[in-house]
Length: 122
Image 1 (cartoon, rainbow, N blue to C red):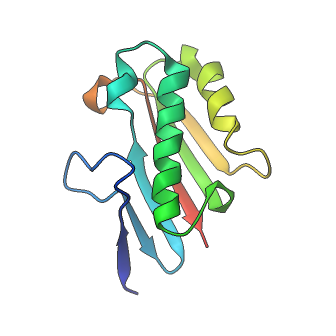
Image 2: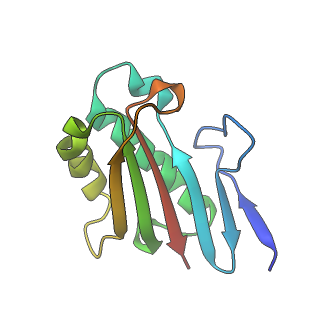
């Protein structure tokens, strides 16, 4: 069961010892994506949109799209942002959305407000 490292130069490079995504047996595991450059703007919708675009670029590098996503995890700095994040996130899943959990966490890398990871299948 060989693994394939997935990388898109259209998404931010990893900030640590991990890959943007790894593909094994037709399943793609996308690492948590953030939008550090937008985190200080206070615009959670813009930040979420950039995170989702980054995920889209990585999925594209694997030959997949949002329709292939079966599971998502959303980590929020402030659960009061849930509705805004949900609005933007939901615009990427107009049919048959994936399973998902959303949790509030004490702190995220680079002090961002949202981080999202996904699992997709061919």
